[in-house]
Image (cartoon, rainbow, N blue to C red; front, top):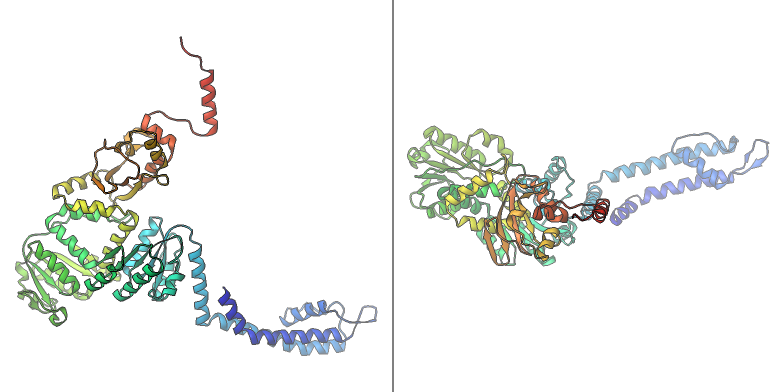
Length: 572
């Protein structure tokens, strides 16, 4: 605000001086020129009346001559001053309009409004650097989960989308280079309520600078960074960045899961879903030879993972000199033409992966391949979210959307930190185990992704539950699954995982004992969390679940209960 006031004074200095001088001279003339009162006596206007008359005269309001009718000398002076004051006001007002439309002044006003917006946030928020496909998807998911964000992006049109996107709460955003330390500080890097920094720009080098700056200026703040090359990934990890996400490796890993463990793949998809997202369908990849079009960063990640799974893959690449060499048996070409696909034996393949960095080419590859072999399993990489309609119309079996993959993973890391531990254990299980768990989860949810949440047995998160443990009560897993309105009914949720220090318990039995400090992962329908929170935070409700006896709540009810107990006579 000090900067805006300084710019206003500096830019309007001359118009204000002109306006003040002309008004002062006009007032002085009316004070010095003698007038005539209603009795015909000479009188002089005081400064108050002169100021009042010049003010409405200069702004062309025109209330008439005050306090008495003017004589000829006063009217002659008024005639001269009318032109001077009106011109001065027009000059000043024009200068103000010119200043308001000045790009530098408007940018300064936007910056100050952004600073105020960040300062007004009193709850934890995440600083999201980059509002492209990934950032917009993530911010919307966080907002729907009740988590605040602050956005920094270098393109103004993306900030316009932020304002017009229909988000339920206001998200402060600024058009600036997020790699600059001053910008990160302005966006709340050192704000006590800043819960973490998320670097999601399309430039790995900028993500690297954001991570370094965040760790230098606020070392204890968690940082999540996107990296599409292994060199940058190693560099970012070298100074303690907590989570680094490579979308190509992530998708390749999920694809490998779908090859050997479709149940675990489906469990991953469900558990990393965002609020109100429809459930993914089971994915069964056919066994046989696959054709991979594009051998860039994405193609190399997919090829390596499929090769480890024993899947024979034929590569098609148009520019082998850029990729650093092709694997044996590769075909040089774009894959959009039938000749190249025929050379890769597309008619004998069971599936094709269109993985170039051009959406139009990927769709062209899919359409050409489908004509040559209608039975193919079709997978395509989608680079831009604005092409959603085209990819939906293509009737693909699987779409690799880079923004969606990164956003889903980050959302899971932010909302349920212990979910990563659970999925790591789940990945070590067999496919039958995963199918059984998926079946159990589907039994407690509708057609939307399960709501995952974490309970920490401490004073802040579960005071009633902790009090029961401190009092020596044997609190079991099944107590958390009881309906707080009727303890004989079960809530539609599942307790999936307990982290107790270094000990991690996967799918604990219902008779397992809970302890202080436990971090508990649960999943179920949306809205169930509120009922569980009611049980673990309200002592009366928790006592009812534990003992089956309803406790009176409120001072009046407790007073009545005590009175009844005192007046009740013992039976003989």
